[in-house]
Amino acid sequence: MARKVAVISGASSGIGKETAALLVEAGWRVFAFNRGKADIPGVESVTVDITKTEDIRRGVEAVKQQAGRVDLLVNNAGMGISGAAEDTSDESAFYQMDVNFFGAFRLAREVLPLMREQGGGRIVNVSSIAAVFFVPFQGFYSASKAAVNALFTAMQNEVRPFGILISNVMPGDTKTGFTDNRRKCADASPVYRERMEQSVAVMEKDERNGMPARAVAREILRQAARRKPKPFVTVGFKNKTLVFLSKILPAALVNRLVYSIYG
Image (tube, rainbow, N blue to C red; front, side, top):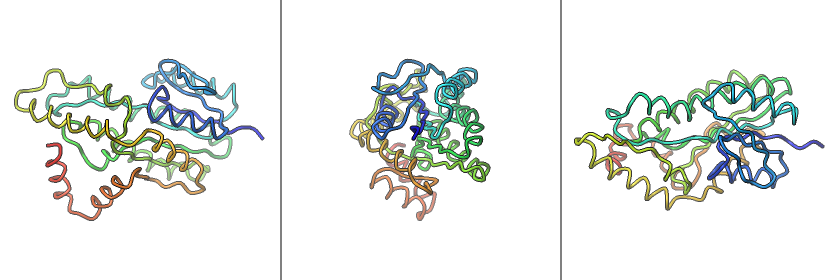
């Protein structure tokens, strides 16, 4: 029996690297789409910049030529910027959305025809509970993840008749290189600077003490294997409790609680 084939973006470190490694352990043939080489035993690297449509097209075509199919797409590549919305440049805002939202969209758009032709497939997006809790001084990150949830939930009903199933996995604070790679606003206004620095310090402390990336990777594999994957999956008991409370408490109260932590 031929091995199932997975494509995963952003597999050079963190959640992506752990997911790729677990897929290999489970017997999958894994192609990693990164700007650089993914140094993971058993993983085949394809140089792809997900902000470039032609790169993605070449990458998917390479997978098609070598493996003939894509059973699973894991949209994991992502980055974060921090700063007050008022201080955020067009360039920074567009890049945040380009990587986290449009990158996932571009990959799905190129993989969907192949999945449709083969009679089905799975897409798992690495979203975030920031899509539910709108974090001050990281608003564009929250916006990008909320946009992923919205687009791919709508997309699910478009592709359901073709046997293609979609899940959005939403981790909270996770110990990865994301923390050190976050782009910080270099020109923060005096009216925001002190609060922004305090807010980001809280985020970074929580992330460095967060759940291991492998815990998120395991959930991605569970959703890839489920007969009926969940549309939204929160990872971690504490995070599940927070998301549940966000559904039953008044939105204004939830936002005030977020303000008390990060505002």
